[in-house]
Amino acid sequence: MGNFQALLSLPGKGDRVIVKVVNHVQYNVTIHWHGVRQLRSGWADGPAYITQCPIQTGQSYVYNFTITGQRGTLFWHAHISWLRVTLYGPMVILPKRGVPYPFPQPFKEVPIIFGEWWKADTETIINQALQTGGAPNISDAYTFNGLPGPLYNCSSKDTFKLKVKPGKTYLLRLINAALNDELFFSIANHNLTVVEADAVYVKPFKTNIVLITPGQTTNVLLKTKHRHPNATFLMAARPYATGPAAFDNSTTAGILEYHPPSNTTKKINKLTLLKPKLPVFNDTKLATSFSRNIRSLNSAKFPAKVPQKVDKHFFFTVGLGLSPCPKNQTCQGPNNTMLEASVNNVSFVMPTTALLQSHFFNQSRGVYTTDFPTNPPFKFNYTGNPPNNIMVTGGTKVAVLPFNTSVELVMQDTSIIGAESHPLHLHGFNFFVVGLGFGNYNSKTDPAKFNLVDPAERNTVGVPSGGWVAIRFLADNPGVWFMHCHLEVHTSWGLKMAWIVMDGKRRHQKLPPPPSDLPKC
Image (cartoon, rainbow, N blue to C red):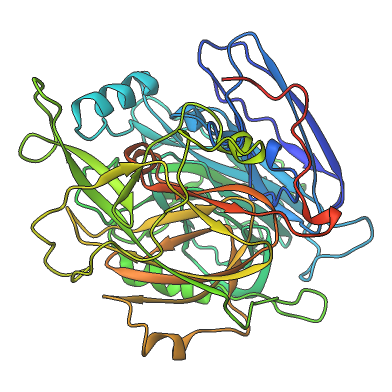
């Protein structure tokens, strides 16, 4: 499967989107429209066994949804096993015709999508890892618009080049579609101005480093130099990694090249290639200060509608754990165990039929239970010495929310096996990042520091390594909504759960029945 990177560019918010997906590959497949709210169209959301059974080989399914009240950079990707490794592409929603951006109109817009590449077959890699209980092999390269760039062996011809004119403003739409790695991005000798994150306008701020986790998008303005600079510039990305595991510590890059001035007749000498200085791989201080800089624009035109009152509080631990090795087998996790990941110590077990269908037709028996824990099953020093028993429990548990519930969720990283940053993605909603901190969350003192005025509004947020993040959202979208770590290896190990949002009383507050071509399991 090559990089299927079709750019879905939509003429304006309020558009109906109809995409027929025909499966010609040997694997079951689904497509997720990452960051699209899917208001009352959960059947089109795409995560396998959550909102649909996968599209089997030779079968097709029509994704049919309307984009309401959203514009900006999102992306689409496969949402089953590890297939999104090559099956992804940008999704750009333009403002309504005639509606300007809240920043200077760019001369040109350029999508830049980061990917991750393995020489071996990734389905074999993850399936073997899940059988042995060990960590899967790390990737061989990162890609920049599908190309690794000049810093790998024999790949210099496979380099993305961005040709620019002097004295112009370019809008770069950055997307991290890598499987397992957060990335730092920088362009040599150029500052960037961040203007949007996860398709929500933000208060513009200048930076020379952008941190972007898998599942996140960031729009930046690049102002080119007034004169031809007699140099070319490397645009590079390499990982931000915090956990105990091995990771691919390589660098993908593209080249920023200025068009030669029109009056030059002589051939320009070979220009110097300048390289950016990227942070060290575990620079959590820089990662955190970047995250804290992201604030909603919160203007009259683009208000931040932060829920001020909270109906339901949840406290979730997120992190790694272990499960015992099956009888008569040797396992590759620590001390002959299997590596797992969990939310509130529940390692989510994928059902064999889709949750949304089971919920809609009231057939939950034997598929899922509604007892997902609101708090961790037992308290411990989450970021200190781990408890003696670090075994997880498996289960297909969901949390149920009445329609229009205002939710506050605190997600706490744990140091079990190792503290690590976890980019958590919530389907079906944007949420407000009202607080974050390090160490253990304190429910008495920390809420006083929450930002309820102009917090970042996102669909994917990094739970800080050895820290916590607090989010708020309004459950105004009936359906079943997946929430998971966007590091695919952690999702495979069970760092995922689902919310069921019940129907409201009015007609437009209910989920319509499924389309007739919804795939069967």
